[in-house]
Length: 415
Image 1 (cartoon, rainbow, N blue to C red):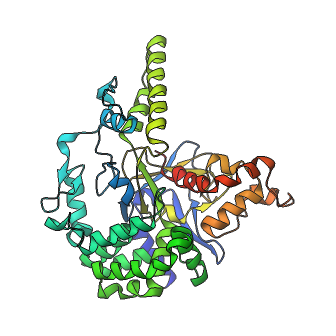
Image 2: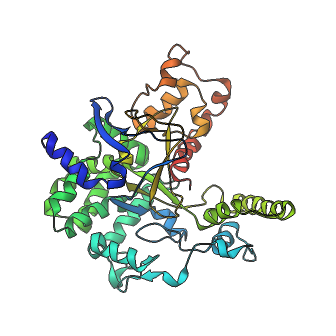
């Protein structure tokens, strides 16, 4: 596609409000695209808001009764329902119930398969984009249905903590199937960064691990049985399926929603007498201790989505922006962590705070294993002469590498 056509496509695909703040530029073969400020952006300012092209809740997350809207991932539990389930205490009672934003009276279900949505608007949006293809109707609980077989196979290959979803790929196919302008959606999906064949192999290995890597072809056959579409027939070939898998693995942004977290933030904003504030903070602290004992770190309704603008944000170990989901749904807010000048690249971090404080060698090891690149941000360049060894503290943590991988996902899904 010619450069002028590409520019026209981005202008049509990117929300007008975002266009006033950012632009996408091609940096080079190493980094690909980058996101740059087109105006002065102040610390704490929302740079842009963005809905995903497609999103999906993680399969194990849904199976463990984290009830979320099937379209926007908004938690369907009230704050007190959320607190009771996570703490395992049916007698939990929360003060200030008026601060909970969940409205059960607005919830809707697909009349055919009973999948739940937070509103009539989300039900309609899902049906209009992809749900007509994916609706199981009366076969929702039939384990022999091709889609159910696909989901079961995926769960058996990808245990928690989850980092991707086969249903994100299914919704991509279903979107193309339902679309009147199939070329438009195909062009949207091709905007996401791609990898070489060797890099794709590494991504597949990282997502599935040694145990299940050989079963990728089994997953592809189930995917084909459930969803084959001639217009995207390449996605169903061994090479194309691996590429699709890598696209989702590389570009998928974790999404986390929580009605309890939203209630806590609202409580924090209350102006209360000192004694009442102390009682409320003590109650919340104890609640989270109880939840940690019962549920551990899995607090949110979690899933992933493909975001056109966010996916263009490159990594830095000293990020000037961060993505979050403060609206308790899939609407991504990109917020400035410091003042950003016109023409300056907008970078996020793929590492959590603790990982960013580690040595350059440790950061590079994590980024190379999870994202297949070597960071050259200002912090890494300033530490270029540091020895390529981890600190004693990091050596003690070496046995917790699996936990670190989980923290990567937690950082992306924090509300």
